[in-house]
Image 1 (cartoon, helix red, strand yellow):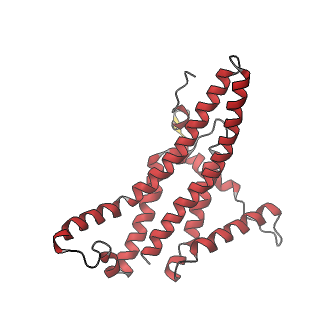
Image 2: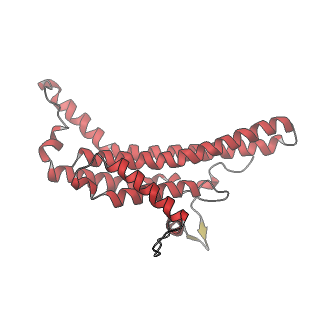
Image 3: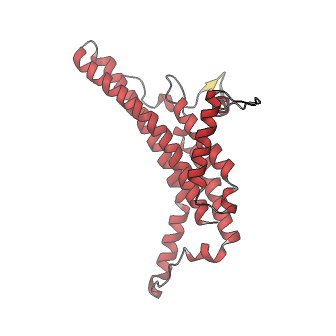
Length: 226
């Protein structure tokens, strides 16, 4: 119980060098491409899930928005697989790092905003000042809408970081409590172990849901600007 709660979130190193890049590249191994005419069951299930998700997410987009399909599908697969791999014992979850999540959120958000100002200049500027606004409220609303626009990528990154970090901390705390209670009260330790199993199942769901939410919000930002 004396172990640092945040030790698992420290950047792993090998021979003094960070290996985060290797960890980030590892999930790509889980999605092999097949050159066979008939795929096996695993690849067929992967392709079916990707097609189902892409149809559901890209149905609201026009032709310009649908050009982002490959990027958004790659994003949801990367975040989802990274979150799931982070639930393995003694593993590192890159999505618990706010810097990495900001590195994903800011370029994607900036790309959607750039498209909006490029193709829908009037509509993009109209978001800063709703129709029928009283004259004396115009300066205040412009400032508020500008702040709300620039807060979008921060909210994306903080939401993902907070949810994944909170789940890992709960698993760590309940797991440590279970080990400490085994010698004191086995019956209580059994109850906490059952809670730990249920929480782990919940975290598997949260890992996938957060990947979907992150990508869906980027998709909605894209829809508003195309």
